[in-house]
Amino acid sequence: MTLYGVNNTNYNQLVAAFPKLKVVARGQELRVSGEPIEIERFEDKLLVLVEFYGRYNRLSEDDLKGLLQDDAKAMMDAGEDMDDVLVWGNNGKAIRARTVNQRVMVNLYDKNDLLFALGPAGSGKTYTAIALAVRALKNKEIRKIILTRPAVEAGERLGFLPGDMKEKLDPYLQPLYDALHDMIPARKLTTFMEDGTVQIAPLAYMRGRTLDNAFVILDEAQNTTIPQIKMFLTRMGKNAKFIITGDMTQIDLPRQVDSGLVKAMQLLRNVDGIGVVELDSRDIIRHRLVKYIVHAFDKDKESADGHTNN
Image (cartoon, rainbow, N blue to C red; front, side, top):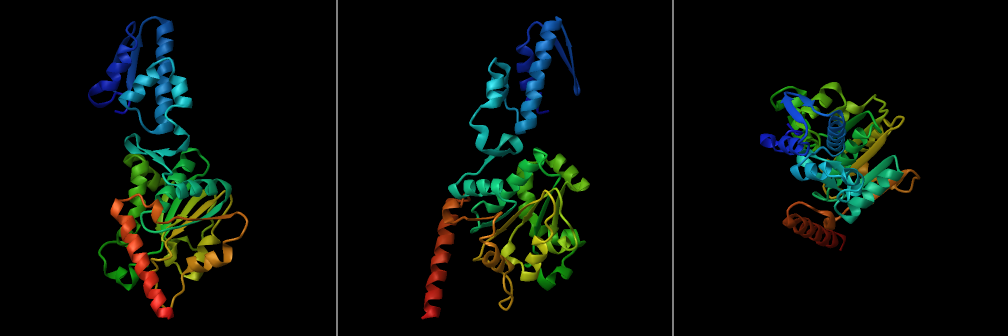
């Protein structure tokens, strides 16, 4: 479907580029007849198209036009400033680090095996982390992606929700599913989840495991307790990459329970091999009003804290 294009637009363009050949499509097979030299040129060009799709997960009419020209290799090598693209998402969407702090996050990831990414809602910390994970999987740097978060919001009410444990917990893991669906085709994602290449689970399911050859993301880490985050961090195995994301201003734990993320930052901030990036309202890339909402609430909290201290 991707190669042929909607209503065979790509296929027709490809055939028109080789007028000396007879090309017939039979399902997933292309039958080509003509002079051997022309057939060899056609095969070479077809391999370029397949390689381009495999690398960037897209093949639009414009892509095809450029790739059919003699400068196809240059387009593959340099193209449209592709160096800063973390991964090509579905429908050819280029997923990049779009703000200064998101780029800092990418650079720190390259230099550290454990990275803390802190920031407000909408600052792209989780989305960027998942993009890095998908890139690592596609580049075969790791064998599996594990995404987890504490299901604090469920509390004691979890047992009253309908369905099995997965169905009860899925609403709390939905933001992770949403990001993955942006970056991996639905059918392939289903296969990955069935064979364990991509795993999404509540934090409690990490206990007792050693996570080797894995890219592991702990989301909403501000809602972990101190024992929980210690348990999670000590799961780190060989050839593992860990990213912990959280928002210090959105702690949903009971008042008497200390946040594990706060404690981890106090203890680990200056440890060699551990990176820390702090995103802020300037990194918010949702609706333009979100950053103003975050700023207004932060300002109100600062004012309330000031009155309390006085």
